[in-house]
Length: 117
Image (cartoon, rainbow, N blue to C red; front, side, top):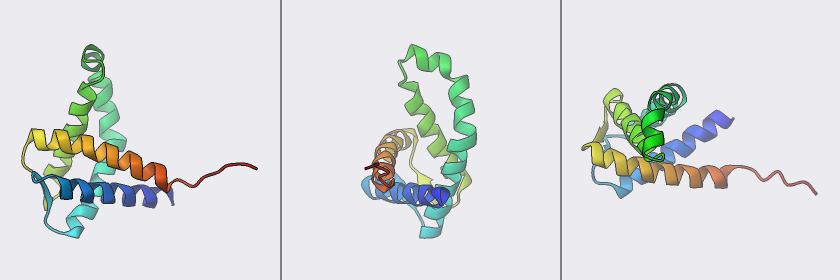
C-alpha cells in the first residue's frame, strides 16, 4: 500500500511541477505515470550510489551538490521516458527543488496520524 501511495504522491508532485514550469512537460497522463515510476526507481537504486560517489563534492559544497544530483535524476528520467520533456539543466535544477518541496509536503499530509491516547 505504501508503494502505491508513494507513486501517487510522486505523480501528483510531477503534475504540479509541470504546471509551474514551462521547461518541464508531459505529452500525456501515461507519460506522467511512467515518469513517476521511473523516477521512483532511479531515486531508489541509482541516486544513493551517485550520492556516495559525489560525497566529497557534497561535503565541499555543504550539501548543495545534492541538488545537482536530484536534477540529474530528473534529467535521466526524461531521457528514459518518451513523452517527458525537460528544456535543459536549469529547468531540471529548479524543477527538482520544487518537486522535492511538493513531494515532501504531500507525503507529510498523506501519512496517517498514529497518536496514542
